[in-house]
Length: 352
Picture 1 (cartoon, rainbow, N blue to C red):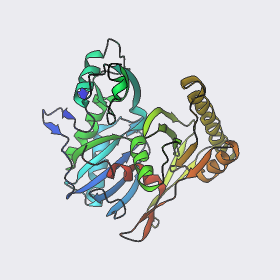
Picture 2 (spheres, rainbow, N blue to C red):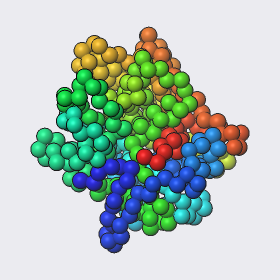
Picture 3 (spheres, one colour):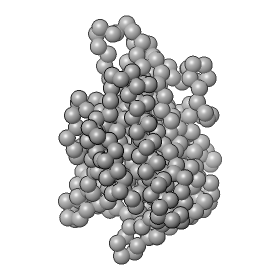
Picture 4 (tube, rainbow, N blue to C red):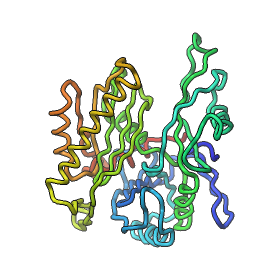
């Protein structure tokens, strides 16, 4: 197991050891979001997301990436090499989100005397294959910030949330990035980046439970957050065929579906129904009615996002439904699409 998604030691096929460096806030940093169909890039100096230096998106050619896994490594290398040259981002430090389809979340009970992150990761490492079973070999494991223990519970075991992703797949990404003269620095989980952005730009109440929904053209990724802690994670591909057209003038991707409009909208409505089932599962199965989602926070690049927003408002009586606005870049006095929210959240990650 490789421990700590933020500082990963990765060994590539040429026996070159790659280090995820600690953050140097004075350096220009690229924040990458990659999925099967697109790549989005935001460049900042440090964590000032209101002074974005560069942003852009491009279509990823078909069959380079499938379900988050690089299928054609040579093709992906050539694609990234051309992109780095086009955007003039050679030698930039780079942070990227693990493709959402590769990430799983688990809970594990750990002894109360383990309070440091390294101690907890070592414990999880020792339990792999024993009390902890994952669907892939050589996992990369990380945990969110470790909360202090109440003195009353210091002798009790506590439940820790951890994330896992297949190390082999992440190595492919980091190797390509290094080969095209980028400097891998940190890796994150997409829904955590998005929550970080939400928390930074909106008023977040401690007594509210937030369901964040990244509703993209070909997938949904959601997480339920209670007092800043993630309690539920889900990724789902949409049963639909998407195609994109890059608009040179607008410098953005226009997404559309191969299926007819009625079928496409029906798929989106089905996803809203799925959200209702997840909210009920969270409330009754996980928490026996003691906890309930109070707010839904919506963003993404789905072409029917406005329709989905309206459907949610109509469907979920008593739940606040917020469609996050586009991001305002004070440096250039222009707006950046809400589709870039996970990348902007990466910029807020800090050095840990």
